[in-house]
Image (tube, rainbow, N blue to C red; front, side, top):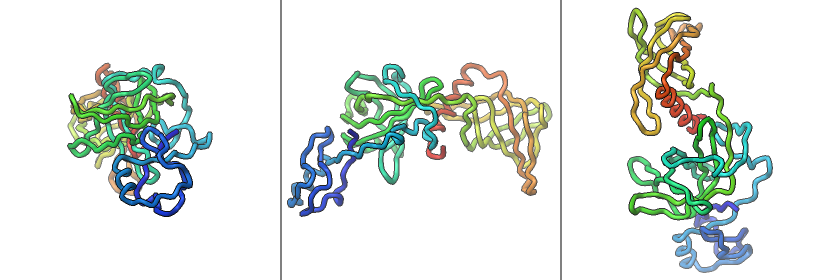
Amino acid sequence: MPLIPLKEDEIVLGAPLPWNVTDAEGQIIFEQSRVLDSQPMLTQLFKLGLYRSAPEPAAAEEKLDVAGNGAPGDIQTSTLEQIQLAPGDPVQLQTLHPTHAERYQVRMIGVHAPVSIMVTTPIHQGKLAFIKEGQQFLVRGFVGKDAVAYRTRVLKSNLAPFPYLHLAYPRTVQSMRIRSSARVPLQLVTAVLTDHAQSSAKIVDLSVGGARMISPAVFAQKGDELKLSFRVNPAGMEVYMTVKAKVRAVQEDDAGSGQVTTGVEFTDLGEQERLYLTTVVYQNLLKDTL
């Protein structure tokens, strides 16, 4: 059963406990209805970590928000062996908190079935994030065209020979097929090269097959072919891409703002270019804005 970390103000001295209090492994330390009256003892126990069992979710709530976009969609349940997440794959750790959730990008290191999964320790603002043993996470990632998610908790945090975490091996993993046309909102400054001139625009949403851009003036007409150059950051790498595209739509703002929207389809993408774009789209599907 999932565990919820307790805060010190959630246990009132002299009042019966409303739930069982456990350690990080789920072993009961204080049973429900017990009355605690020693603040020094409680303070020491909180330093080690105290937890309570999370309520069982209703059947309709069991499905995880696999893609992180608020819409679970058509979700399948399988095992980690069937999913085949591999060492080096990027995944996201999301803290499970009722009011706010932090997200960390980490990488898979290895699997010791059926005990643990090893991932790199998160980095936050250039420093190692403080991760407590017993802390619970929702893990999200991508395998091929499938978004996957599962709940876990930290079994062990190690610093040697390098910082890494042991996460509890999940009994089940949920997955959802991502449409090839999936689009993500971005803000990418882009150089635009046509047969006649060079200008600039901003990509405001992106898919593996194309993009929507805005610009202060018309730079091409429907059917024109052009080249786009922009920087992306797939899986932590800084990549400068130049891709061929064909204009599919041009629309000027009727409100008189002067803003022009141009839709393009990417053409003649190489395998490496397609891989970079796929990684960027999948990464951004995991962000808060989706």
